[in-house]
Image (cartoon, rainbow, N blue to C red):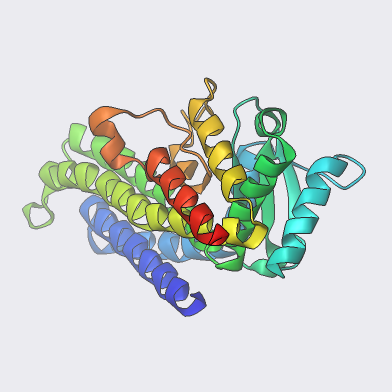
Length: 286
C-alpha cells in the first residue's frame, strides 16, 4: 500500500508540474515555462511538508488534549491502540456541520479532526466507527495522498482562473505557436476537469477501503453504518464556498450534489457504503 501510494503521489506531482508549465508557456513562452517550473517545484515541496497544516488552518481546527475533551480523546486513543498506530494529534473544528477527516504526511505526523456537530450528533459507538474509518486512512498511509490532492486541486483552480482572465484579455501573448487566447480558453476548461477527475479517482475507492478496514478494526460495522446515515441526513453542511478542493478529505460528502452532479461526487453513494457494511456485519457473525 505504501509503495502504491508513493507512486500515486509522484504521478500527481508530475501532473501538477506539467499543467503549471503548460499554462506558464501559454502566458509567457519559455520564460513563463521557467517561472512556472519553479513555482511547481515550490508547490510540491509545500504540499509534502505543510499541506496538512494548511487544511487544519482553513477549517480553524484547534488541537485538544484529554483534559479538553476526554470523550473524544479516549475514543481516538482506544482506536489507535486497536489499529496499532501512534496516537495522532486530535483536533476539533468549530462548526455545527457534522464531519471528520484525517491528514498528515505519515503515521508519525498524523492528525484526526472532527467537528463540533459530529460530537453532538453521534453516540459513542457511532463516533468510534467514524474514528476507526479515519485511522484506517492513517494505517493505509493514504492521508498524505488525500491532503496533497486537496492542495493540488486548489492550485489547479487558481490556474484555471488565471487562464480564464488570459482568454478574456485575448491571451498574454499573441504568438500563434502558443495558441494565444484560444490556448488560454482550453486551459481554463481542461485544468478544473483534471482536478475533478483526480479527486474522484482517488477518493471513492479510498472511502470504501477505509470503511471496511475501520469497521473490522473496531467491530463497529453497525456503528459506522448508522453514523453514515445520520451524516447523510444532516441538514447542515460544511461551507466549502472557498475550499471545495478539500471535500474529498471528509468522511461524508460535505456538498449536496444530486442527480447528474452526483456523478462528479468525490464520495461513493452512502446507500452503497451502508449496504457493504451490513453485508460485512453478517459475514462477521457467521
